[in-house]
Image (cartoon, rainbow, N blue to C red; front, side, top):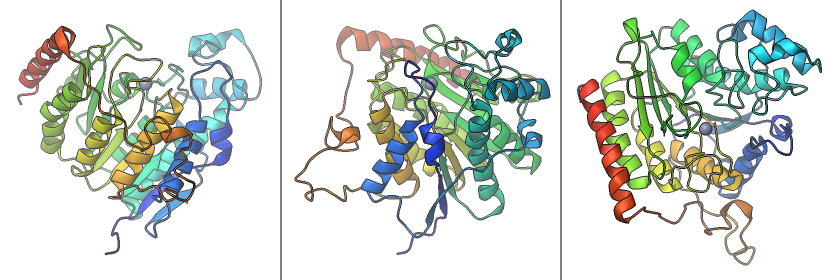
Length: 375
Ligand SMILES: [Zn+2]
């Protein structure tokens, strides 16, 4: 039977080649690894799919998410200027270096997420994935956490202008602070972030008490998790809080920030997930909304990130990825799946007294949240 979906994968080789510097953990080439892996597994060659080049966002649309002053600063930096005031805007730090071309690069990354949203709302598209998007830490006038332009905020504002309701779910290991801030008083956006607790890592926010303000009260949901949370507890949290809340909210569009830095091998975080829970969550999200805009995000083990994103793309398109080259190259494994010989990780579970302690902490958080959101 022919697949009834219409889906778009955004990609540009130039954007994937952009370099934050040898010592910087953020590697846009993850997008290229993902594209290659998707091709290899035969999940990017279906008639209902297209691969599109990201357009560049003009200033009028960038202003949906950022101040004019900040955009001017980014533009000057992008042209190679270095000046002291840039630090007030968060640029020129170790995390957010003053990179030549950063404005143009970010405008295109954001262009893909924005155009993806338009495709969902106006052009009959059902599934969009932008592996070069998901910059959830950028603020209105401040770069932060490797993020300069907040593509998510811009795309969601565009959706609100067209009168639709949006659920934003963020499974990156870090709290989606920039997106939370933009919609904190908004009841047409349901913001949900599952992350390693701000007690332990950047951006040191995303506590259960942060639940929105004014009209937005109750529409911001934060699920902070302790270090070493594994698949079992992570899935339990997802089933208990986000799943019923999204069902209750009934969004027209679901925006999913699918950062892959919650994986066990990620060098920057302490969660202990495998892509088995990641894949299951994407599968369950797929069942919650007919229009899904998915983006990348964190993910500093680049091969594992490519496996996560390939799985996500396949699942969103109702496909079962198969290695097209299995047997043809004598079973030889290439980079991304070399560790396990498959897209899926080996299962991993934390055990013993350590697990009991983590379980207790997670259960405490879930019970506070269940009460707060009347679940
Ligand atoms: Zn992250």
